[in-house]
Length: 214
Length: 214
Image (tube, rainbow over all chains, first blue to last red; front, side, top):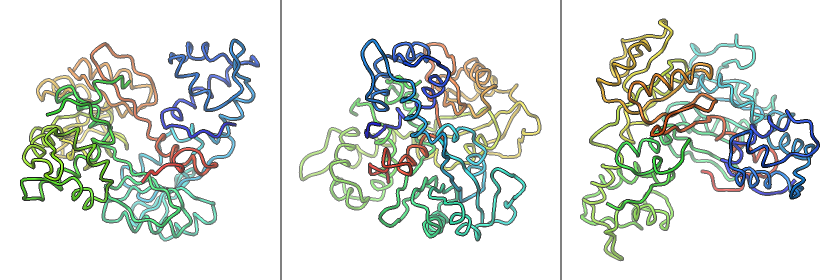
């Protein structure tokens, strides 16, 4: 497999490619045919495919088995990454029940909350547990990825608890900068920003409306 | 004001710049001092400032009043854009209660749901109303921006209802491609993708872990 870094946009299209390639039986996959079926630009599809395989040949296509193996490895189709969410408020619960993670080989396996009212072990696939059980749960389940969905004031202590539990990748929805040691990756998510970028057009032609955003 | 298109990343930093500039009293704003206080790279801050103002002068800085006026115009600080959400499930409610929109001059003023159990007019700032009232509400309140937070099967009809109500910018959380007429901007949001990109590193060094993501 090529060792290129995948852009977020390319990554977002991979589940679609994987579904298409799984539906095919020919040993060779044609990028132009795939582009046509998926209603994507041919140049874009070739660019994406070149991140996944260096076995493409003009007029012959890409070897189906190699594409399949590489996509399944990247998307973790055979080996889900377990994820926990700290904070079982509306956002935390929305994330815990969101179906889209499995496309990327991610599985939210538990939520944690300091409010005993929110604890709910009845949901088999993804229970909400007391935050005091976070560390043991993460160690026992090999969890390295955590989501912070608590209010700003509680975010740093949630972050510290995740790191103490062995988590090395943190997705932070709280509107604040977290302090983390070296070796911990933090992705800050600002839910409002995508909408704000889309809406720049509503204020006079800047931003998203000038681009093809769909 | 310069008529440059703002990137999403630049837009995301503007509320921070606005807070800083409001806190200052000097007539001139120094980009290097602002970069230092906000812990950002100086080159980055200068690049962002040049999208906001063309009045920067070496060793003198940017005129505070002009920056302030331009930022407030872009961020809609004086003139909020009203937004509606269709779908008052966990995700819809999480968005309706999310505080971050006001930084960008956006205000979610109502949610709509076809399930009468979810209707709740008691929340003064952002009630949940029956979907049958969508069109009249949007017309009366000049709503041009709508969020789709319904399941995939209901997304196209939610989209059609928003467009019939005069909405021209749609932020879609349902995992499907919407069909829209010309003149309607659609931004598809995949909540899972940011986490997936962050987690590429957990599978062997691709993607987010190779970049500075914090």
